[in-house]
Length: 203
Image 1 (cartoon, rainbow, N blue to C red):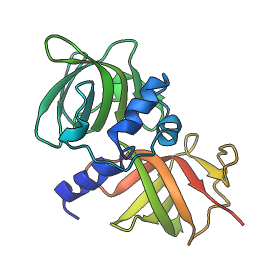
Image 2: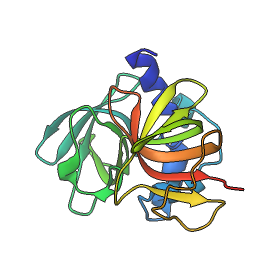
Image 3: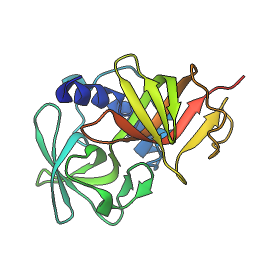
């Protein structure tokens, strides 16, 4: 899969829809689990869904407290990050973890100068529905139906939800051949993600 195709695939995979991001911030949370719970509509990010207070794309530059972003439609945006902005990158974090090349979803208020004052920013977040096809030390091998993805287990961060029970750090019940939904952070320009939460079932 080419870089462009992977970007399009991951753009569709990141929370699924703009509506999912809107729902998350409306609840006052940047939590990926909240965003996932709000993800119901299977719609694209086309012009019919345009929202001036929502931006998706890739970070092309960081200048002071401003993120310069190029969207998948080639439009350019400036995202103003403040001390009140919630930032997620595998876990709740700070603006200092943002990097050029990161995928970005942001929600906020459009200012008169055209910048977006962000209340929430998600960096590299992906929501993958997959089948676990292999396991190795510290990693799960996933088949999304479009490509193979390596999911890295991050000590102290990655968690599993089995049969809808509360999340635990114990990944020992994960099995090859089962279906899994993975919320994680994409490693840009690769087919690899760091796992935040894995949802799967056990007998």
